[in-house]
Image (cartoon, rainbow, N blue to C red; front, top):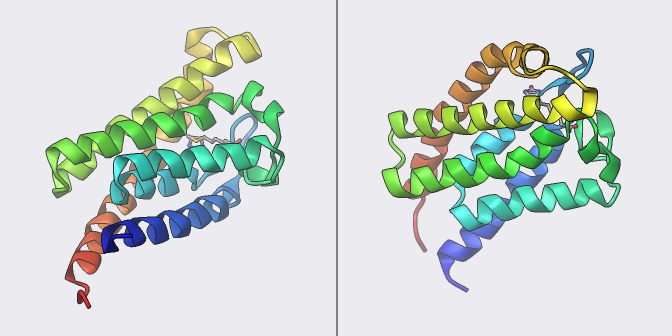
Length: 179
Ligand SMILES: O=C(O)CCCC[C@@H]1SC[C@@H]2NC(=O)N[C@@H]21
């Protein structure tokens, strides 16, 4: 196994644990909690190669789907996917895929990290909100008011921390002595 593979696998394991922990750091709101999940997803998408990023998020969803309490508020089970927050969960994969693909082809400069994560966050909020339309019988306007608008400012704050941290961590890893 190459050093890069070992490095990516180790980082993938650590980031999966970070995602599970961040899922429990929540502020409960009426229908959808404010959580640090998207902070962890942003780190995963910004630091891991595309296939690892997608696999880590997929593994997280599988752990939750089989009933482990890894989703927000220690919830789990397949039923969460057909509830109001199911769209956000599914679109975590999209966030990881689109953002890491963007970074793969455009590079990891500060501005690339910002743009890639903005796209990921917007996709996540859009899919998450639209998912609520059939689940809660909402109009598009109501779904966006509940699922998109309240999370925009927190989303920008989390995104900025992701970008600063990802930039730092990339430098740390690339400056690490190679034995
Ligand atoms: O049930 C779950 O585990 C998913 C919760 C989803 C919360 C969404 S993710 C995007 C938006 N930003 C937040 O902080 N909360 C919502």
